[in-house]
Amino acid sequence: MTYSAAIECLRTAKNIVITTHINPDGDGVGAGLALVHALSGLGKQVRFLCPSKVVSMYAFLPGYADIQVLEDEASAAATAKADVIISCDAGDIERLGFVAKVARTTLINLDHHVTNTRFGDINVVDVNAESTGVVVEQVLEAMGVPLDKRIAECLYTTIVFDTGRFMHSNTTAHTFRWTAKLLDAGIDASAINRFLAYTKKPHDLLIQKMGIENLSVDAQEQRIAGIVLSADAIKAVGEPEDWGDLVEIARSLQGNQIAYLLRESKDKKSVRCSMRANPPYEVGVVAQAFGGGGHRQAAGCTYQGDLASALRDIVPRLRQQLPSEIK
Ligand SMILES: [Mn+2]
Image 1 (cartoon, rainbow, N blue to C red):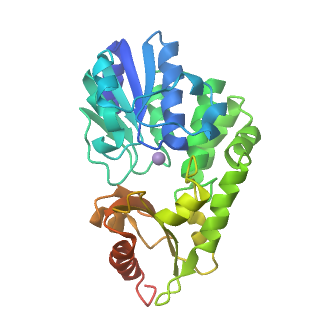
Image 2: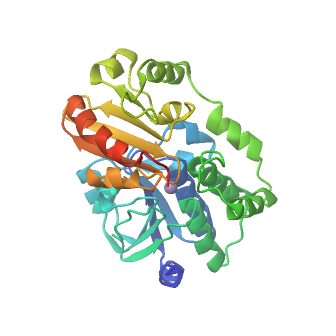
């Protein structure tokens, strides 16, 4: 890992912008806020600019209220030049939206996606890290920044989110050792878990209901199940603030190995596809085939075309990922 270049750059930087990807998740927000607290503590001027709204589920995180949303070209042009922009958890520069247009001397790319395009001037991409929060913690440790409670709360959120509450295949002995350090910093892990899991609104549950109603097992390959939501179905219930882990409903079926969620866009011209697989099966390659990316077992893409075409093109590729005999 090329941590040294990032650390050298951050030591001298005075004015720093932190960012994460569009539709930010627990890893991007937590990793970014951990950096905000750590770098502010070193006396630097730090701003967290997000390319789209951060869902209210993360409002419990310290620093949430100071996150600024930057969603258009004019705002990017009006933003003061930064010495450094630090991107957290984004696999490619398009994921940074208009924040990518903010003037800076250096762009540091901190990430763990296997499909990361190394778009930064300095790239610290550790595909073995469970979350980008783990990468951030390595940077902070190398800089000699101690883990305080606020930083640990933010980092804990990254690991809970990206391991699916310590359930996915990226959960290792390292994960638990690393997480134990965060608990040693005095965080209330149980309270954070409740914020992340038990703060659904009635509308969020209606979305879950719609997911269950639109769930189907593939007729040709029973190890595949998916949820297909048309623009009209989504409109009838109302767009959620966050689509969260709806794909997990399909994944939770007994015998399931690959799960997908297809959501038709409002204009019916594209389809957002989220995919999950149990190892050794992979869906990252399928997402990449349609211009998307992610991890081997959790990936997504935006398919250009209507819902019927998306099903026709994507599902056969998912079937190919499941050989009839498990080797
Ligand atoms: Mn992540």
